[in-house]
Length: 205
View 1 (cartoon, rainbow, N blue to C red):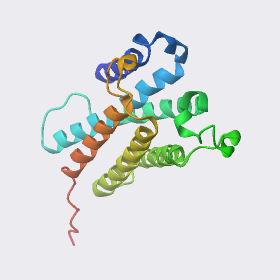
View 2: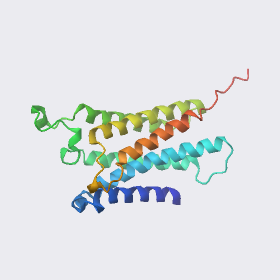
View 3: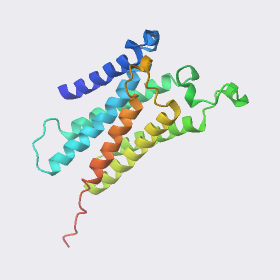
View 4: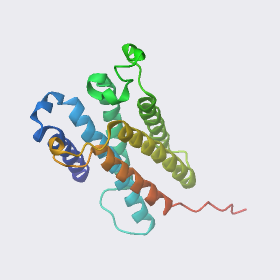
């Protein structure tokens, strides 16, 4: 449990340093906007830890935190992340997700195609995580669901990155954006999954 708490704490601290410590004017974005970024990254890293630990279990290694604990922590982070993201889903926070103000449709507050991609695939990833919390799957079915959920999550994160860009400058302490770190984490999830595919169960009959 302490490792899970430490991961969430470090992610939120990273977010605070990147968005506030070197740009105090962003202090007004506490608590939701800044904390949300840390929580979302922590959730992605929890999934990575879960798949890595599961891979180690398959290889007979001794582990500390059980894979299911890491996965539940990731689901918890996703549940925490979603309402916070929806609470600040406005051009004042995420102007990159909306049609530019110069466009006539901007008056209606319509999201851009890329912005809609972010939330479409975010919803699909959340649905995949929900299915993974069910117990009726065989190991191979769970593996396929895990791959599908991580692909949806990767598209969600990359669409976010496409909208927001790198933004590595002095006002961000030259630290990598959190969507990029999350994307690396999710990509690593997919790599671990691909090398740990369970074998189909043979019919004894």
